[in-house]
Length: 384
Image (cartoon, rainbow, N blue to C red; front, side):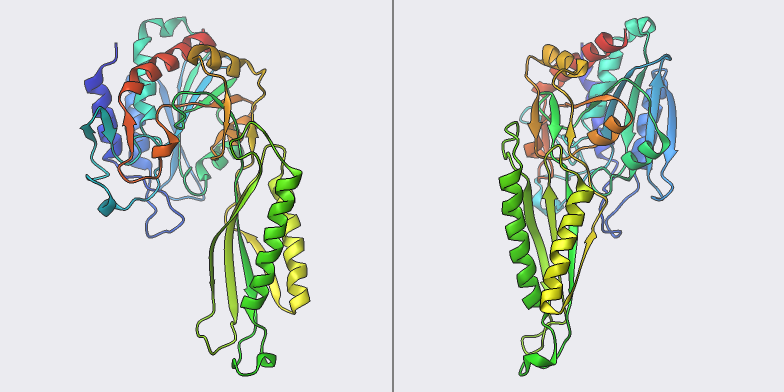
């Protein structure tokens, strides 16, 4: 039976420990306090907790906590960071757990600090059976999933952890996900030449070239939509979104420079490096036609699309335990990184993605006991 008091206390402590990750250094925070909390709780349950500090991200770390020995095993993975928030848009302090309307409110309740108390409760619910396990349980807590994914990248460089199965507890309402789109974020920089607006021949207008760039990208977006489709996705084609554009400084001055930032979400089977190269070639040519320099650069290394075969043992077990068929989602996760380590990987956790990154984020309390039961059954099925 779920110890609701203990569950709530753990969730309260996690929410009250800010761990925002952000590409803006003024907002970005360390996640070490959350890692230490989780490490202490898991050590009390007999796990060997190892902290992996991330060399190129000071103040950031992963936790790899292992119970048992042997080949194979099950990884239960989640990220410790949250996105930034706007406290003035919340009905309560986002860093204080609020219990009302049969919901727990707070930053990270769904995405995805709430997964860790579920895992702890699941382990405690089968503590009398742990000695029967023949393969290890590994609880993995990562850094910076919401920004650079530096935690997942550090794990792949170190080839850690090693196991047979991995479940990433992102919010899916405990319905198994076996594929998602990737994401790449790109910057297009146009370097023109300033001059007096009364004589266009005095310079090269970066905004004129950016107009050409936008036309090329719109045509490329249509090309991708025509060439690639996957019916498993609600939006069954790759998307390319113009996120922001900045350029110029005065209406009577030829625009000297302009920058566009966009994201592209490719389907499984599409390669990020190939897409980047193709875009770079197209836009460089557009710049040459206008006599203006155009460069394309990556805002971050990107996340590859992910797909786990429908025939995977892990997919079949998850479908049987939940009663739901596996499906696809548009948002990206750490799944490709764990899959690169040789594990069968699915995404499945409590809460709804619709609540993620929103003011007044919450998790439905009715989901918690069911989630605990499913995770405990996954452990006993795959590790015993």
